[in-house]
Amino acid sequence: MKIIDNPEEIYFSELGGADVTVIFYMDDEKKLFNSLEWKSIEPDHIVTLDMIREQIEDKYGKNLIVVIAEYPLRGEIFRYGNYEDNRWVRIGKVCGYA
Image 1 (tube, rainbow, N blue to C red):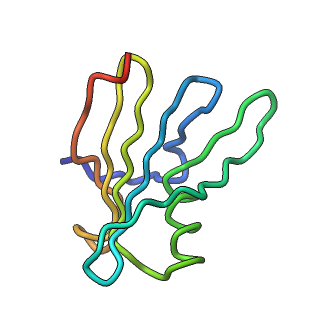
Image 2 (image 1 turned 60 degrees about the vertical axis):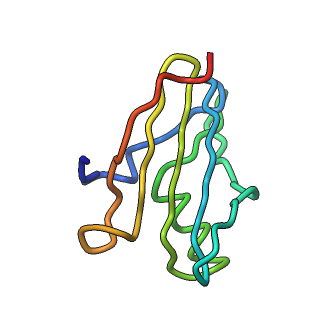
């Protein structure tokens, strides 16, 4: 596990091939967050860990969040709200979807 000190700087790039899955836990039930809003930064669209947290908190309040972010050859898994004073933590790596 690695604590993320700068979640506003950890971003995922749509143009770079990011496939981002967001799961949050509300009332002891897993829910898929499928209304993720990406920020347009020409020519790309990005989303940061902080943007994901803010979007979920705006709609559903504070919850445990899991983000699986995959690129063709690599990926990472992050969790928010379960460790270290509600901080983002990288809890794993994956090989990507290619």
